[in-house]
Length: 508
Image (cartoon, rainbow, N blue to C red; front, top):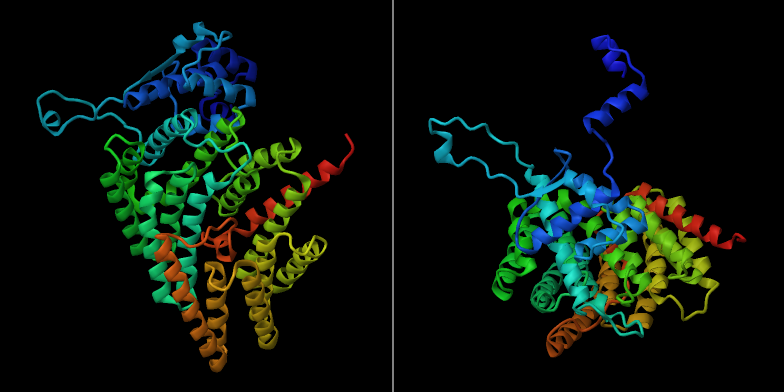
C-alpha cells in the first residue's frame, strides 16, 4: 500500500484491496481442499511416471511452498492429504472448488532444431533444477514409503523389536567410526573398516529398512565433510551398485538418476528438504496406522541430531517432541534421558568453541543425573559422559587428570561393550593418540600393541560373520559431531525438553 501511495499516488484502504483481489480471483493462501487435490493428482501421476506442475486459479505453485504447507498442516488436513494420496476420496470434499486446480506435465523446452527455425518460439521459464530435483525425489520417496508400509515390508513384531531400524543405524555408525579411527591416527584400520562398510552396503541395499535412504544420504555428507573425493567415491559406488543389483524401475535407481545430476553440491543443498520431508511423511504415516514400526526413543535420536545440525526445522522437532511426551509415547524417564543426551550434545558444541567452564559444568550435571539412577542403567550415556570428562580435561591442559579420565573411559568401555567392540576400539584410539601428543611414548606404545591385538580379534569376528561383528543400538561419541552441530540449535533442543518436562509436571 505504501509503495502504491508513494510511487503511483494511488490511495485505497485494506478493505478495498481485498475486495478487488477477491474479484480478480487472487488469493495468497492455499486452501486445504486445493492442497488435498494437488497431492492426490501428484501421487496418481507419479505412479505412472509423469512429472507434475500444479496451478491454482492459473497461478503456478512453487513445490517448496506445497511442502511447507504439508509440514504445517493441522492433523485433520494431514490425514486428508494422506487419504487422497492413497486414492481415498472423502465424502466431505468440495468438488466445485477443484475446477481451480490444474496439474499437468511441464512443457518441454524448445529443442535445438526448432530454436533456429523461422518460427520464433519464446523460451519458457522452467522450474530450476535446484527446486525440481528435491521435489521429484520426494515424490519417489513418498510412493516408496507408502508402498513399503502398506505391503508390510517395514512392519515389526508387536513386542517392539527394534531390529527394523537398527540395520541402517548400525551401518551408518560403523561408517562414522571409520572416520573416528582416521582422526585418531589409525588410518589403515579406519579405511579397512570403511571398506567393510562398503561391502555391507550391498546387503542393506537388498533389504532396505525405513531409514536406509536417509542413512545413505547422510553418509555421503559425512564422508564429503572429511574428504571431498571420498564423498564423490561413495556416490559413484552406491549409484553404480544400485543399478547393478536393483531393476531400472526401482525407486532407488530413480532417485540416483536425479541425485547424480547435481552431485555432492546438490546433496548438501537439498539435505534439509529431503530429511525433513521424509521424516514428516514417515512420521505421519506411522501415527495414522497401528503398525509398530520403531522404538520411539531411537526415532527421536534421529530428529534431535538432524535439528542440531540444521537439517530439520525447530517447528517439526517441537511438534514431534511435544506430541510424544504429551501422548505418553515417550515416558517421563525417557524424556529425561533425552534431555541428558541433548545436554551431551551441548557440551560438545561448547568444547568446539573452547567454552570449557560451561562444558565441565554441564558434564557434571549429566553425571549427577546418572548417579541418581541404578548403576547398570544408561551404559551408553555413562560412557559418553566419561569421554566428555576426558575431553574437558584434555582441552584444559590438565595432563594428569586427562590421563586418569582416559583410563576411566577405557575401563568403562570394556565393562560395557567388551574389549574388542568397535566403540571400545575407537575410545582406545583416542586415548592412544592423546598419549602420543603429550609425549607419553611408553604408554602410547603399550596401548598401540594392545589395540592391534584387539583389532585382529575384531577383524576375525567380522570375517567369520561376514559382516559387522556387533550391533550398535545407540550413537557413540563422534556420531554427535560428525556433521558439525550448531550451538544455538542444540540449546533450543535442551530448552524444548526442559519446557516439556515442566509442563508434564504441571497439574491439569
